[in-house]
Amino acid sequence: MPRRVRNADLETREARRKLKARGKPYWQAIGLGLHIGYRKSKGRAVWVVRRYLGEQSYKNETFALADDVEDADGVHVLTFWQAQEFARGMRAPHVGAYTVRRAVADYLDNLAGRASQATVRARSKTYILPRFADVPVVELKADEIREWHREVAHTPRIRKRDPNDPDHARKRKVSANQCLNNLKASLNFALAHQKVVCAPVWNLVKPFRGVDIPRNRYLTPEECQRLLDACPDNFRILVRAALETGCRFSELARLRVGDFDRRAGTLHIRETKNQNPRHVILTAEACEFFSGLKTDDAFLLGRAWTLKQQNKCMREACKSAGLTDVVFHSMRHTWGSLSTMNGMPLLLVARGLGHTTTRMVDRRYAHLSPDYVADTIRSHAPRFGASKGRSL
Image (tube, rainbow, N blue to C red; front, top):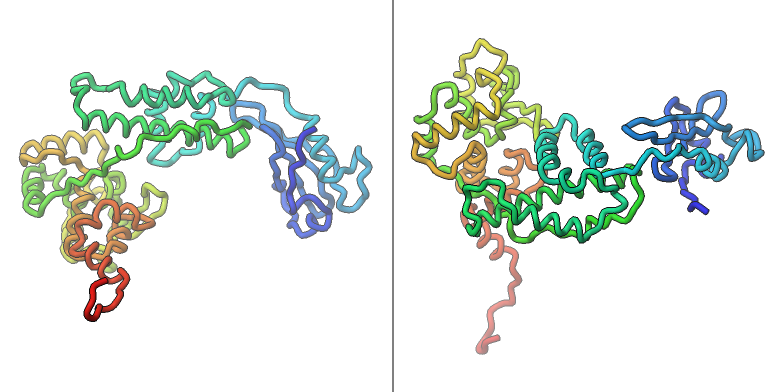
């Protein structure tokens, strides 16, 4: 007999009286692809069943009155528990196994509009789907996922690289961890949304440890000037904007003229990685730079930059400036590193970079803060007083 699913808001007529009348039912999942709903209107209250038909398709059907006014008769008027049993008897016919392919597709749909969607889609197409596409989620085994994870880590994608180079081996493990995280995220999303019911064996597979070393390359003020001098005029504006704000390329690429507020001395970043818009506080020098931009376009930096255009310009500028191991994201690290070394508190560095906590800046920049570690330890370490005449 199926286990009863409890819901304190729906179990009794007394609890349901406290719910507001509305057109949308109050839903409760009671099984794989199966929900029971309570729809309350001014005239009456009814039980509704929602069944998943596959391919993102659902069917809703009203099947009985709720026992809010009349006593349940087991046919036309049902209690919450009777409605559960009746809904299970109306379950939709089997629509095929829920495969990893469908789990990935549902997860990608959930990421719609987020910057991470394209990256997750590419990794899934290259690494996840070739191995697991048609495997039912309920049939996945931890050993198979673990074996795949290791294969990804030991299969170089670029043949020109030396397979024995330890740094390249480390980077492959980082990539394998990212693929594993994407697979887990897809499967956990399916589990959380009642697409499938099974034990999450994939969580038994652990990522490689100690391989994710943050990129700490930043430019000195002299290197920044060399890079700016090597940039063509239009690209120099983009690089300078990154150095003045610490913003990501994606945040700068489509800035509008109206996003710069000269009087407040701020730059409004509307589209961010964490979906939380923010205002970047600008220095007087940065305000002067943005105020001096002359553009007849709606875009603050003169155009809507694409990643392909930026990568090409960045490679050529770095080559001209004689800079190695520098990418556009290095401008962000430069802002964070130089701000920290100039004494800016890490909390404000995190705020300037758009982080919600200081975890990332602690990891990347704490060692650059003047006497940050030493001062913190000395101010918080225990004290035992001076010993008189004898040692501890």
